[in-house]
Length: 394
Image 1 (cartoon, rainbow, N blue to C red):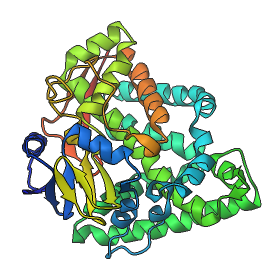
Image 2 (spheres, rainbow, N blue to C red):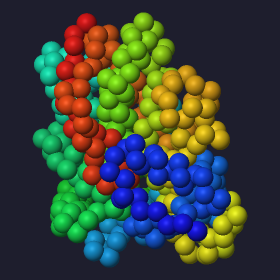
Image 3 (tube, rainbow, N blue to C red):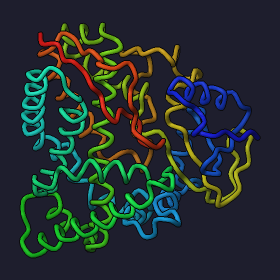
C-alpha cells in the first residue's frame, strides 16, 4: 500500500494529479501527515460518509483535539456523535434549518445580498472575499444567532483558525489556542444572557428546544455554536468565492447566467463538485473493515477525500472540465450523505444563489487582478483567502 503526502503538491493542479494517482491504486492508500487510511474513489468516499455502523464520526473528536490544543467544544458537537445520541442532538437543532426556517430567512438574505452586491460593483475593484463572499454568510449567521454586529469582525479570524486545527503547523498553534479561549468566553456569555432573557434568535431557540423530554445543556449549546459559527460561514463563503473565481476563469458562464437566471443553480452545483469547499470526511473504523480490497483495522483513522471523489472519472465524464448542467451534476459528495448530511446545505445553496442573482445582472465581467490565487491555509477548507477582482459594471 502506497503512502502519499497531502502537503507535497505545490499547486491545485498538482493536488488533482496526486488525487488521480491515488484513485488509480488498487485499494486504499495511506496518507501523511495524518497517518490515516484514505479513500480517493467516489464509491469509497460515499461509503465512508454513509455507513455510520462501520465508520464512526468520533474521528472528528480526535482531529478536533490534537495534543497541542487540549479541550475543544467542537469535539463534543453532534458531528462527532453516532446514533442514538446523534439522532437526539440533530432533532433538537434541525428545526432551524428546515424548510420553514429557511423560508423565514429568505427576504433577509436576499436584501443583504443585494446591498453587498450593489456596494461591491459601485467600488468596482474589491477583494471579493471581504466585499461579499465572506461578509454575506457572516452577517446572516451572526443575525440568526442574535449576536452583536460590532463583534462580527472577529469571526473571520476565528473561522480560519478553527478550520486549521486538523492540519496546523506549530507556528499556528498559539493563535488557534487563543481563538478557542476567546470563543468559549464570548459564546458562554451569549448563552448566559439568553438564559436570563430569551430573544427571537437561534441561541434562544436551542435553549428552549425539547425532544422526548430532553433539553440541551449549556455545554451542548456551546459545542453546537462552536460548530455552527465557523461552519455557517466557511462552507458558504468558499462556495461563493469559488463561484466568483470560476466566473472569472470561464466568462461564458457569466453570459449564460445573465441570459437565464435558472442557470445559476446548475452553475453552483458544478462549483460544489469542481472546487469543493470541504475537502475531507474523517471517520474511525468501528471494526475491521474491508473496503476496495483493503483491510482497515478497527480503531484506524479513515479519510474520505471529497475533492478526489468529486473528480472520479468512473462517475463523472470529463471530470476535470467545468461543465454546469452535466449528467449527475448534483451527485457530488460535498455536503456528505446519510445521517451526517450537512444541516446547513439548504442555507448555503440559498445564500450562494441569492449572492449570484444579486451580482450577475449588475456586471458584464469578473476580472482577476492577479493571476495567482491565494488559497486558504490548511487542507480541510478550500477557497480563496483573498480574491482581488475588478467587477465591470453592466
